[in-house]
Length: 188
Image: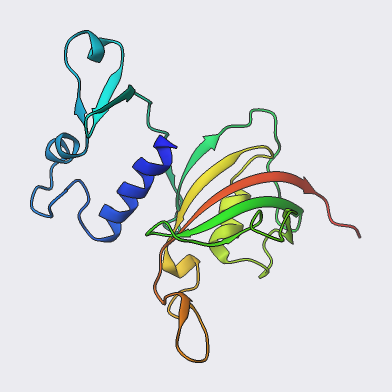
């Protein structure tokens, strides 16, 4: 849960151009970190305890953030040591939740009426290009959280109705939690 909160805050600051800044003026990492979380002093700091808004909790190491050439950023939230990587053309089964950068869920495999994983051919146009690329870099059993830029999502089109109302506005950066459940070679 803490990882999602930290990642959501980072997304908002990056998207708004305030990376490492709480107020848009201080752009160094020290001022960002001092504004976001104050580290407890004394014995608590030695034990790895942080205080955020007066609430103390154990410090958790931030996950490593990977950046792909396409601009997609992702962090592995549940590693898989033994799982295999899928190959282009394989049939993959994923569970996912898609979020806007404000945290609003726009789609999920586990939402009401959807109890099955999403099956698709890796590399096909059944999903957005960014989701294809993220899954291609995952192992079976691995869970990641990915930030997908507009050019790898719905681009300048977004997902809009004829009346102009948009579920996903044009130019939106999207966030996905993805679990790769299975991969298999497609039938001949």
